[in-house]
Length: 246
View 1 (cartoon, one colour):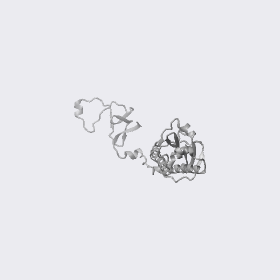
View 2 (cartoon, one colour):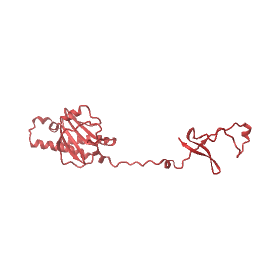
View 3 (cartoon, rainbow, N blue to C red):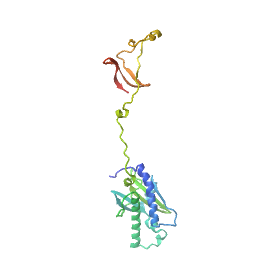
View 4 (spheres, helix red, strand yellow):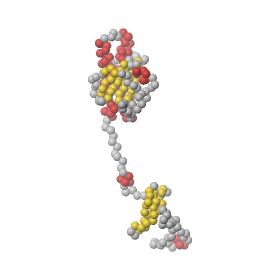
């Protein structure tokens, strides 16, 4: 069963910064096509339609690193020997140079993201590009009519990311609110009073209301209703017994 995954923003940023530079450094160390057209080396956020078919026709090799695979593919003879590829005699010397070039490419990529060199590189079947929900990072190399690909699992970027920033947990609502206070208001529909009666009101006077005791009242914060309840008594004080919150 194939594992599913995603690359992630931090890993993608790290890959785009380091992997193309590692491939260019490998090219310079091996003096590959020094007078040819510039190599185009890029991390692919999205594999193009022609890439899977093109990659199928290349020679693929795989190295194991930190429990994940690093795959490389390319027109190796043309990439390494350039204009002399057609004149190259087949033999152990040529095969040795090709093997060392591929191994150096893999180890240069691994070193750029903080991994130890790989000691083994074996021929393998073509690696499928552009699989949905894949955690593959694909680096594509193009020089004239020749192509190469470096494919590695995004998990290999973990060592280059540094420690993960752990954000503090969210507080419970009660802790977040703390001792903050809000002003609550409760409005009662009062009976009619004359202006004279209002002027004569004194603490302790009783005002009649039109609301029934069986009628629920609304508790507000500003204009927003936050709860409803009924008139009640708490010891010697009038109170509102809440029955529901909004």
